[in-house]
Amino acid sequence: MDESSKQQPGPGATFADVVILGASFAGIEAYRLLRRNPVTRKLRVVVVDRLPDHGYIPLVHERVCGRIPAGTSSLPTRKWIERDPRAKFVTDTVVGMEPERGLVHLQASQAIKARFIIVALGSSVAPPTGIEGHQFLACLKFEPDFEQLRARLNALLDNRKPASSIVIVGGGISGVELAGDLAHLRRQKPVGWQVPRVTLVQSRERLLPKLGRSAGAKALKKLRAQGVDVRLQTRLLSAQSNNVSLQTAGGAGSETIACDLALWTGGLQPAPILAKLGLPLTEEGWLRVGPTLQCFAEVKPRMPEIFACGDAPRVFGGKGQWPTMQRAIECLWQAQTVVKNIATLAAEPAGYPHGVPPLVPHKLRTDFFHGVSVGAYSMITYGPIALELGPLAVWFRRFLMRQYFARYRAE
Ligand SMILES: Cc1cc2nc3c(=O)[nH]c(=O)nc-3n(C[C@H](O)[C@H](O)[C@H](O)COP(=O)(O)OP(=O)(O)OC[C@H]3O[C@@H](n4cnc5c(N)ncnc54)[C@H](O)[C@@H]3O)c2cc1C
Image 1 (cartoon, rainbow, N blue to C red):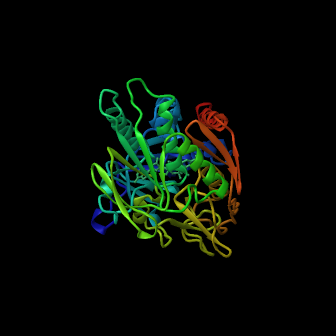
Image 2: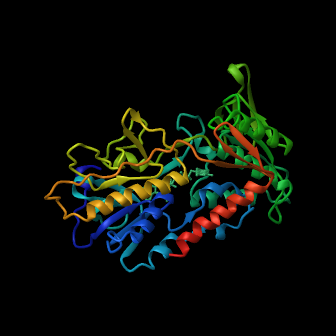
Image 3: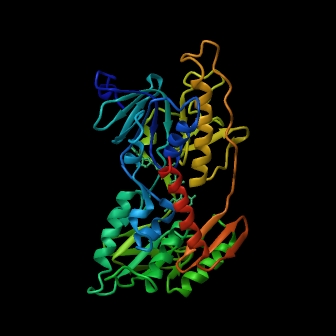
């Protein structure tokens, strides 16, 4: 942020002990744990997010296809946090930060000054701007994406209209699951919808490249059995409002496919705001944190009270960058480390006259079970193992979602 736009923490500023930026998996878990810890329980907490609700991202493909009701698959975060008299929820966009002053700048509200800052601003799903026509590719992660896509599907799949065609670009977990759920409309669909033709485009030689080969092969078989046209080793060249241009393996041929909707499910990118916070970054633009999840992980810490957790940070320590997972469960684990460390610091007077106490490092976990749904089918994978479970894992993941929300609603 430039010097002229810096706000002073004037009379309208909000003062807090802890400010949590981002109220998705990592941010709200940090809030919940702060309230449960005897040292941090009484701290004044401000939570900031541009969105007042936290939709369940792991099942966003089912939500958008109407397989699960939207209302039961999100948490009204603002309402939930505002029940707490020592907490405040600010629905606003973070636009900058002055770490050395403990100040967070917001788009519409006054700045927030806090002793502890937890950055949980996550990641975003967006096509690279270098792809011609990238603006025609719809994405799906947060509630506004979900609502827009749902409205588009409602209009497009109206069964009084001619049959439509949808292209999904990206054969990772999100692309496979979305293609599977769109194909599943043959068996179960919202009233008045028709079934679209679905094409899944994957640049690599197999689906689910981050999972074992067997998972990729099984997903391919199940998608094709449900009528999805899967194109492997095929790269998106450009998109228009009504078609996509593709290049097949080794640049051998190109093809233009007419489509009513093209969806991008390629990899995650750092949330754009991360670059504007004045915090150390990796080359790719993620927050560079130490094993204690502190943003300024120095031997003699100058700013020990700024932490990051969730998708936003990359942990560096020991031999270099840790291979952490960008997954919901990892967000919860990182929130635990952050709150433990804040409790240690909060037990000391500000300014640390006796020195900054040692903090605990986060524990590295490189893998965890994946539940992958492929329309009517599902599998659980772990390392190279992929176990087909029919519809069982679809049901189990909904159960996990209910359990996840129940632990917040119960507090
Ligand atoms: C399609 C999809 C499917 C997935 N499926 C699974 C799965 O099955 N299992 C699994 O474990 N993981 C899954 N993940 C990964 C999981 O969703 C992420 O790891 C998790 O959402 C990260 O949580 P987070 O709290 O770090 O940040 P995010 O969920 O990225 O949330 C960031 C928050 O910050 C807010 N924010 C961002 N910028 C600003 C700003 N400038 N001002 C104010 N607020 C801002 C956003 O509104 C949001 O609430 C999936 C991800 C995607 C995209």
